Length: 272
Image (cartoon, rainbow, N blue to C red; front, side):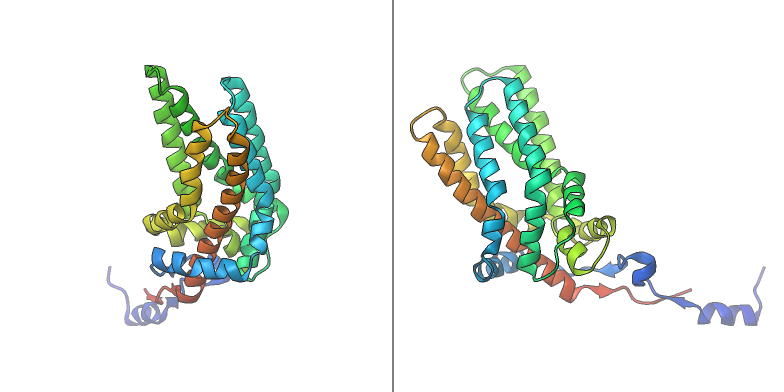
């Protein structure tokens, strides 16, 4: 049934914005492309100008070094699970709020609340990424002499879990800045982080690998020299490298957030 001319004029005059902060939480926007070169190139200067992030990440880095030392020094699966669980709990309760504060310092904004920081970290199981990769290295070194089907299946399952969680953390890596800078609630902050970064996982992954390369090179040495006189010295180096790498990566995400905050554009108005 055709509509009248007056009804047609009403439809033509009706417009709406897809960028209403109150209604949509600012999610209807077009995100800019983020270059890994920009992130890496500007992150070191940012970290050098605000070194307090290094101090804030020290507890989490010390926990990682101790976890790696314990994980590579035990042959019992039950003991390993205990150490991994302790590392996970510490990562949520202590390291996550400090990490949020470090990101806020690097980005020059207010940090989200302690509880919000814990819940956001727990939502994508942030500490489980490091725990899974250490478990993979420990499993590879333990079973290097004798290959079994069970060890191969365990390795593949752990690898899949670690990779999926890794990508989830990359795509949520600016949620803290979203919560602090835009004053979003944690759900909206995480949703916006996913929206802006989910199509740019490879750029984020490249920056992540570069920033963590010193630690990636060192941790297998921890496993190789486990139980030797060199292990205490390697544990200290692991702590130092973990602290530098974690802070460097936070600087990368802060640069990424700065690009998103400055260059994100609202979608054009739609006419019905």
